[in-house]
Image 1 (cartoon, rainbow, N blue to C red):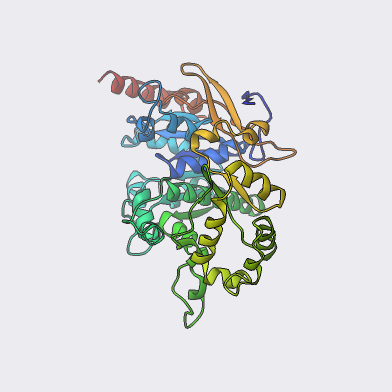
Image 2 (image 1 turned 90 degrees about the vertical axis):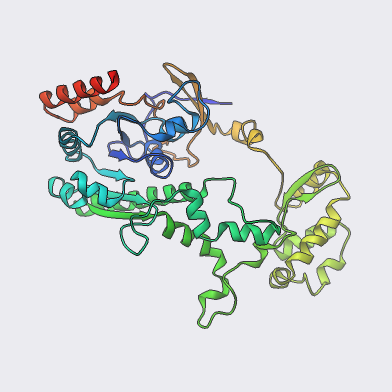
Length: 408
C-alpha cells in the first residue's frame, strides 16, 4: 500500500522552524530534506542556473530529474543571482527571520559574497549558520573541492573493497559519503537548534565530508589501533574476508549472519553438524573472528544443500538472522515496506503522481511526512520575498532581472 500524502496533514516536530537552504547536489539537500520531512519550512535558494541535480539522471522533462525530486520534495524554491548586490540584500532580509542557514559554498566564496557567519550573526544573533563541504574551514585541505568518489577514496573505501574481493579498488555502488555527511549535518543542525532554544543564541557549525567519513569508516576498523602501542592494524578482519559474501543455496543466494554462540548452536543443530559447536576454531565469537574465512566456508558448504526458501524457513524459525538477496527493484515491492506505508505519494502539477521513500522514523505525536512535491526553479520567489518583508521595490527589481535573464 502506498501512503497518499497531503500537504494539509499535520507537520512534524520541526513545525515553525525556518530553514534557508543554499545547498546543491546531494549532501546539503539530503540534510535539508530530512529537516523538511520533520516539519521545517525549507526555502531553497537557487542560482539562475539552478541546482545541478535537476539534470542528474532520468526525469519526465528537462530540469526535473527523479534525483532532484527525491532530495527536494516539500521545499520552496526562490531564484537569486547572488552576483548582484540587490540579491544579496534580499537574502540578508530573509536571514534576519530564519532559524537555520545552510550552505555548501566554499567559505572564501561566501565571504566574497558578503554572506559570512560574522555578517549574518550581526543581523540575527539567534541564527544557526552551517558550512557543509568536502573538508571544512580548517586544515591543509580546507577549501578544496570534493565529490563522493574523492571522499570515498581518501577514507579507505576502495582499498578495503579491493582487499575484500581480491579485485581492483572500486567505489561502492552508493553515494555513501554524501548521504552519511548529509545525515550528520541534519543531527548537527538539530543539536544546534536545541542549543538555540535553550540559550537564545545561534552559532556556526562546520560539517566536513572528510572528517565525517573518516569517523564513519574508522568506527569498526580502528579495532586494536585504539591502543598505545597498537595491537593490530586499523582493519576489522571479518569485513574484508573474501568468503564474506552472500551465501549460495541450491537455487539462489541468501544473506545470513550466524554470529552469536546461541545462533551458531542453533544453526549446527539445523545442519545436523554438532561438530561445529566444539571445533576450537568456532567455539566462540573471538575464535570465529580469528578464523572468519574458515567459518564462512563451513557455512557455505552447508547452505548449498537446500533451496533458499527451505533455508529461510528454517533459519527464521530458529531466529537466526537471514534474508533473501534483494535488488533495488525488489525494494519497491517489498511486502513489509508496503504494509508499513513506507512509500509516500504526492501530486505534482506537471509531472503527476510522484512516489518517494518516506521518512524512516515514526513519531507518535509529531508525525514526519513529505510536505509536498519538489519545486520548480524560482517557483516561490515572489511569494517568499513578500512573506519575509523584502521591500516591494527590491522585489520588483529582482523579478525584472530574472525575467530578462530568462529571455536572454
